[in-house]
Length: 40
Image 1 (cartoon, rainbow, N blue to C red):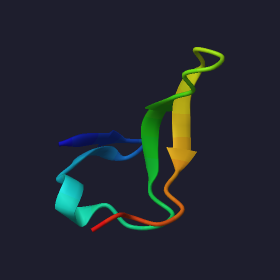
Image 2 (cartoon, helix red, strand yellow):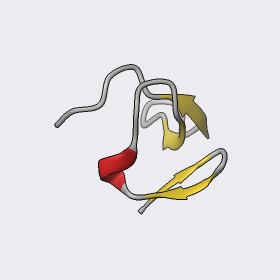
Image 3 (tube, rainbow, N blue to C red):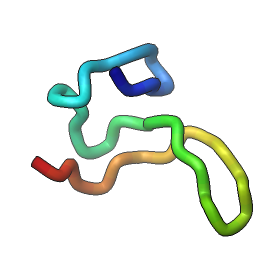
Image 4 (cartoon, rainbow, N blue to C red):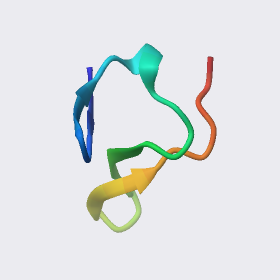
């Protein structure tokens, strides 16, 4: 399951434009960022 801005979703159902919780490893910042293209 992936945490999105709208709740949890199965990773197979993630689409471009979904905002998922992510972390920038360089700055340590976490937040909801849009998926640009899912990797299948």
